[in-house]
Each structure stands twice: as C-alpha cells, then as structure tokens.
Image (cartoon, rainbow, N blue to C red):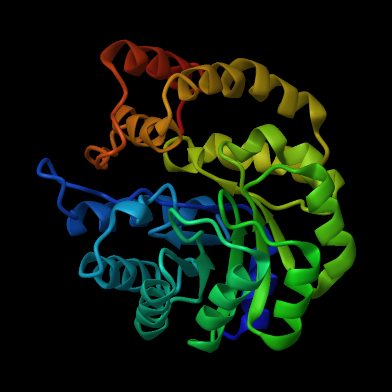
Amino acid sequence: MNPQELKSIMGSGLLSFPLTDFDANGDFDKAGYIKRLEWLAPYGATALFAAGGTGEFFSLTGEEYPEIIQTAVDTCRGKVPIIAGAGGPTRFAIQCAQAAEKAGAHGILLLPHYLTEAGQEGLAAHVEAVCKSVKFGVIVYNRANSRLKPETLARLAERNPNLVGFKDGVGDIELMNSIFLKMGDRFAYLGGLPTAEVYAAAYKAMGTPVYSSAVFNFIPKTAMQFYEAVRDDDMATQHRLLKDFFMPYLDLRNRMAGYAVSIVKAGAKIVGHDAGPVRAPLTDLKPDEMDKLKTLIDSLGPQ
C-alpha cells in the first residue's frame, strides 16, 4: 500500500486500536491476540492500529514489537489493513517503523517521543527522520509533549511526501482549526482524544469526520452504531448513547490516571474476550468498578 492509499483509508470510516493480549505473567499472548483480531476484523473498522496507545505500545520491548505487528498483519491479511504504532526515542521509533514495513503493515502512527520537551525544530527533525527511514505512509499523532504547529507541519509535508495523516490528541480547537485551514486536503485527519466519541460531532464540524474508537474493543456493534450516527448527523442516537453509556463510562474512566486503557481491558474481559492485565505503571480496575462497567455494558444489549 502506498502512502496515498493509506491516506484514503484513513478518511473512509471508523478506525480502532486493538488491545495487546498479555498472559497472567504479563507476557505477550500470541494465541489470544490472534483470536481478538479474528473477532474484531468483521465488524467494519476500515483499519486497525496494532500496538497503538490502547495496545500499550509504551510498555512493549523492542523484542516483542516485531512479533506483535507480524501477528496482526498475518491474521488480518485480506480482511482489514493494519497500521502499526511507532514512537519513543527517534532511533527506537525508526526501528519500529522499519520492522512494521518489513512485516507488511500499511503504515505507521507516529506516537509521541517520551519524557523530554523539545522545540519545533527538534520535533520536526524527529518526525522527518522517521519519515525518511521508510517508504510507506506515516500519520503523526499530536499529543502530550509532541505538539506540532501548522507552520512546522507545512514544512514537514513539503519535504516528506509519505507524511499523509494527522491525528489530534490535544483537543485545542484553535490549533486544530489552524492546522486544517493551512493544510487542507494535504492530510487525512483523525480525531484521537481518549473516548473520541464524546468529541466526534464537534470534530466533524471542523472538517475531521473520522476518529479512532477504543470502545470498539468490547462493544464493536455500539461503536459502529455511534460512528454511523455521527456520519449521518443522527443527533438523537448520538445523544442517547452519550447519555446512557458514554458519560457514565467517563465517570469511571476518570477515577484514575491511566484508566483510559485499563477500562478498555476491563470491558473486553467482561464481554468474554479477556486480554489479560495491564502492565505497570497502569493499574487494573477495582472490583466495584468492574461491576459498574458490567452494568453499563449489559444495558446496551448483545454486541
């Protein structure tokens, strides 16, 4: 798949981040991961991000990463495209990007580097080094300490034809509008705030109608129903699901830092697709929180 084909896929429908399966010891569970991908693939996501944020990329080792991406590509070949997460220090991000390209992934989502702050010049050098290291498409994720300004993105786009996508995880409306108005259709745009459904209608109004869904991991039917409601401007369905499920869900998610991932693993366990525990420093939901989440999930009916 060339970069322009990746760009087209990004703009064509709902995307999601499969969980990464770990066993009771916290090691990668390949068999469980294959079953998860086989379960999710038919539900209608236009692409799946393997080893992304919800897939706990930040906790993976360099030895685990290639196997996870290769497993995703092999399992989903002919069913749904795989975009790999890549990030961390520049040289490690390059290693990930090249491993993903070798495995046959369709592109990468370039996650933020870690710990240190950096100016626009340094951030641009980081993104460009990764883009230059591969031939397939790159989507940059604006989040945390990796926030690119419109002028920086314009320069990067001019020098790197394979930089074709922009995912926003900041939620700065002024910045997002500035980027969209400056870059136009040079990029495909993706809403990427945690529990993106809550922001979906607002982002569509800004020219970003597509987003990535974490809850697709455990309520894929409802996730697709909500996406279709956003696509069709069905505000009645959006408001009903926001009121009955998403807002109470956010109350649980916001109880603890890091629960944006933990609650998704909890949901998968509740619906019979256990992905194992989260890795430290994340923590799993408490029993009473699991009970509250189960009640919310049950209220949605069969998935």
